[in-house]
Image 1 (tube, rainbow, N blue to C red):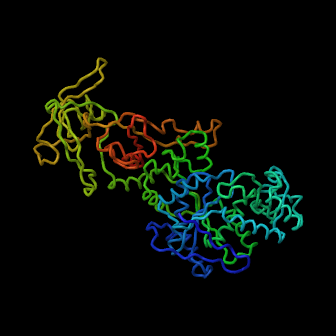
Image 2: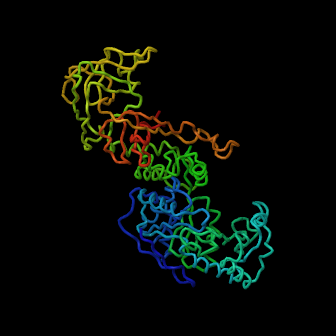
Image 3: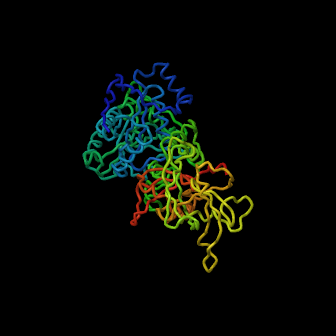
Length: 582
């Protein structure tokens, strides 16, 4: 993807250069339309506040993978820009070399493209603006609006006061601009060790907003940066770098989640002190959390780092890579986000809504195949022993355009053990002694004998079949109430199924227990079926292919795991029925 270097923010009061809008890349499911953000942006357009096109951005820190909450934020900024013919930027907030890595950058780029929110070449890196951000700090020092502070981290934190008590001035607050310029230059040149000095803004230690109590602008970190190497040993804080980066890129509306509302006065202070004309505006929207899911990057990092999950792309995680591996589609995620709408405050949404959107997307778009999880052998005693037949079965009953497939049929089959009941209860319409059912896409069969082990366990069901009842033959003399799925024993493929459930226990309170994660995690969040049986034609499927396993749910052929024995591995995407309808 092409990288651009936008025009730097002006050093005087001239207008920031804007970007031309791009056409043809809006998404139909824009959540900006009709929202309070649309009202605010429209007011800015009508008032002539900006002489440049509308421009928004998503600024992830490359220290982890994107998750469903990130997708909500991306969707909000992307659709807000394109609803007004503007431009959307992806900018990596990579100003902390202690946590960032190129691997995270690559994963974020992949996830955003997959979701359908391509920035179309507008990909930027905060670290590329290091000189301009440094120059901005120099300007503040020269104007007496920033100073070098020697307090330790603990002393600085103690001096900031509390929500009810004002902070106290640093003993270094009144250094002259000349001394601060010298010390800051020495900080950049590597003269001082980590955390020995910081550059702070000089604002108001008695402000009721703690973020304005002389916040840190720069800190010393002697660690190579994944992009700039050893060129820098001082790095700006996000609250300082962010508004400057927005101004450099010509951002008009800096849209962020509600927790940054208290940071907005600092954002505006930086832009005002640097005398930026047509400064970007920051507006906040409510954060979205999924009930029962971990949507905090800090907690996700803990889970991955402790080995409690199978990496950032574990299908139990609400990371975009985990959801992609689980089998979610970008269309279902976008539809889910649009259905939530744009809230002003934090919102908790039930996972069932997301699963419902996914089922809607998959119902008519994936083929249905027969898979047996708990096999019970069936022998059709009146079918020729060495004979076999190839049946033609529809791929998707809900979408005839998906065509049909060939499925082998033979004397020995496997059915689900739960589809046979020796003493059927009322309402059971599957196979039982003397009863008749239809095999999916095949024939009527009738149970005539049960074979058992010495301990009484049923190991085999013997049946007869009626050759006149072949599916699609038009024979209608009698009907049966039940249809069951099956696989041919002679042609079957073995596969591994991974059945996922919620990673967290119901009502789990993360961080509230002394037992840590052990008290929160669901021990049954992953169940593995090692030797499920599936139609042979699925062997030709490519990783990432999705299927409906009849009566067992929607599954995806895993793109990562493949056992040494060569078995196919399928992840269950979602059960067939909405949980909220049970």
